[in-house]
Image (tube, rainbow, N blue to C red; front, side):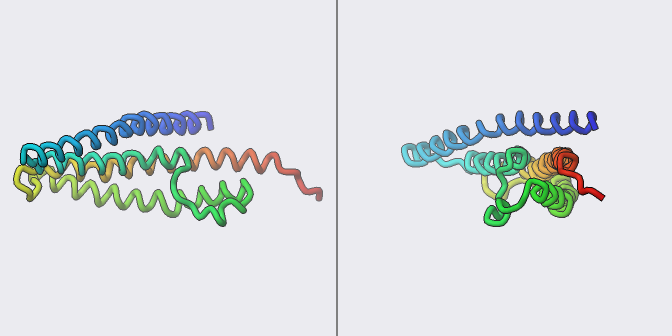
Length: 176
């Protein structure tokens, strides 16, 4: 079990490091957006490449931060019901949610997303906008984001199984 705890901590740490880097993209996006708007309004200069760069950064923030959001328990739950559950029930629900929803969906998106990325990469697909960028970097973000999410789901399963095991062993034993 020690190996699994180390693996879980490593996944958490990786998603934290990536998340800290990705947070800075929000500031860069704001500066890029303001700069692009100023260029357009003051000098009548517009750039599709700058606009598409903002879109790529937004995609990076949204997709690459998903794993850390799961680690920090930031994903939406139906709290009206969830808060009424015991700690054991929450652990079981989180384990089942990861096993039945997050991991299968992530696997499907990784599989399909990598194929879409590879096709765009191999074909050298470009944006249809004049002065646009290569498409494959944006397409690569989809499988990468879901890989991070799937890894974090595995980490959450490890933590919840350990927590559930502790809760079950601490529960008073029924007398025969």
